Image (tube, rainbow, N blue to C red; front, side, top):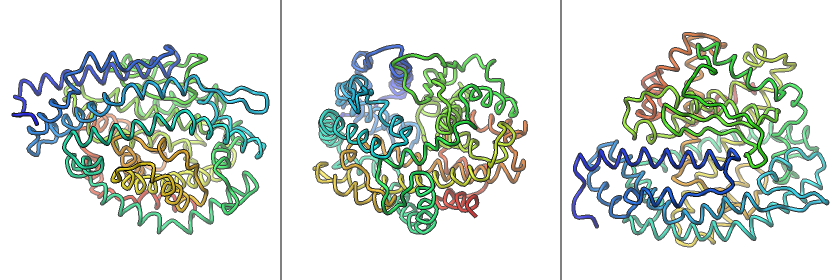
Length: 497
């Protein structure tokens, strides 16, 4: 154990180092997933910043916390850096495998990363089954051994950090109220059970010809891909719609010198939009390979929410407040923009859209599906991270997620379907944050709040806070409300009513 906490000067040096470390990681992520670089090279970055990720550094910062949130965030960052350093070679191996693996199905060769979108776009149910089997086989044979090794290495690393389990580390050391959130999740699963079964069953029957009692996992991406809506969401109108929406809020996307749009087509570019905040707020990358369709539009607007948040973050904030903090905040801004694409008023304003209310209802069912999925995921991850042997959790994964969704997931995904740092909690709280903040915006500025400059001024003011406040604090300050998961369910009920 470290003998003494670092001095204030040493802490400032660690903060500056963390800023550069994250910037380099985000740039590497951008270069690889934008298709500009074949390899995903984390090791040189970790080597350049070895001091930040040393066990002794994390232990020393932990001694300096003493209730201070900024220092606690730096402690968490250093601890996660230590765990990330232990598993970085495995992360590189995983990325390389995902980029190289291919599946041969019915005479076609399909890259591993394209299997999910291919399943979603495939109208023939039996071919979807074959595609899913190919994806499952590749995951089981090539990726799961890597995931399992990473899980075991992480468990030992957590013990090195002085916690018995990953759950204890985040709940007790990093002060995340995971069990309080889990209680809210159980309540949401109970309160939305009948609502979900009724509406999801109808959607599955309409979309793929089977109800929830017969649906299989490869039907799910096809249902929510919603190809019949593609003509309403053309690829060539994605960026103009985003630019027009931001303009209504008083933001000129093309004149934002700190926002860089990457829209070029590249063979190795990931098909899904993403945001890489390399320098916050000075260099934020918004990456898209426009394909069109509702899912692609949602992804673009989601990442645009991240982009505008990071681009408007005050440069005067500390690295903890700009780059670290509560990720439910930036996910909340991303959800606010994403859900515009399901809003009948926005659809009518931006697109020549027939039946916007019908599309909004489908969007609400999709939101309910994902809220329930992530509620079950949190419950699963709490158990997963409390057990010594992760291989015992395969059946529990199927049980918890299958019960929530009424569609059995692939047991192969019991390791891959886990995000580090309990990020699942950020998504869950972001849905509640978005639902409650959207209700406030509608009360203040009307249902078409997204077309009001005054709303844009408020958003820019809130974005400037970065992630200094938590989602709970920000919501309380703006609306006076307490963040509640049931608000996400109420948002769904309002649309489906």
